[in-house]
Image (cartoon, rainbow, N blue to C red; front, side, top):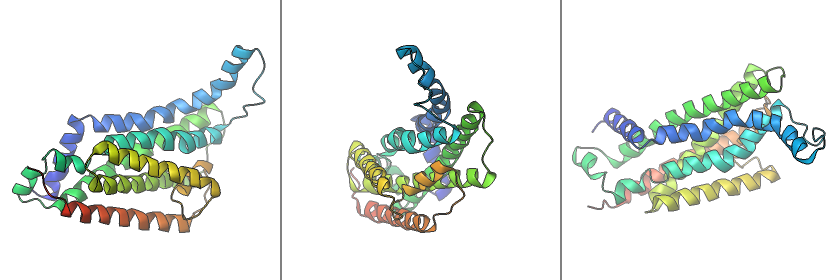
Length: 250
């Protein structure tokens, strides 16, 4: 099988298993739901307790973006990503679906590259649409001037690079483990650790890309970008090497 043929196969499988819809809804729902939820929270609490709560919840458009990226993204969106793609490699072995492609001339390396390339493109589209939607509705609902184009572009870029990093981590653990749920849970645990460590503001922590994206600033954290790129490449190469050594279960 050629690289193009396996890309087409991956698309058909992802579509058949509703992975594309699950990933899109996992990211998009909270991107559009966060702004009105923050806007309505003080009013709902005021009705509940009979006291004006607006002074305790001084939210704005940037807070809405930060809430989506800094809270919903790592806690829910990445969880959906891990669970959906946890079996991306290990299921190929355990279910024996890799046997047919190999008999037709496909190489394990090509299979991993095709899978990673496919979801790298899919997640670029999903994350960009979700981030742009959240930014648009956040500034529209809170009636504030929209940020600069550079800030928006960098925000989308930083978010995507972190998601791409997490994709490589999922591939790594999926190549190491036999069970999809195990790979998903460990990948999510890895993400949670990075999220917790972000409170110490280490520039070597890839999650700092999400932190920077939440600010909608135009600062360029070069050191964090380089570390994230290196770790992503290392994790992906490791997943290829490990998957090549896995024995196919007939």
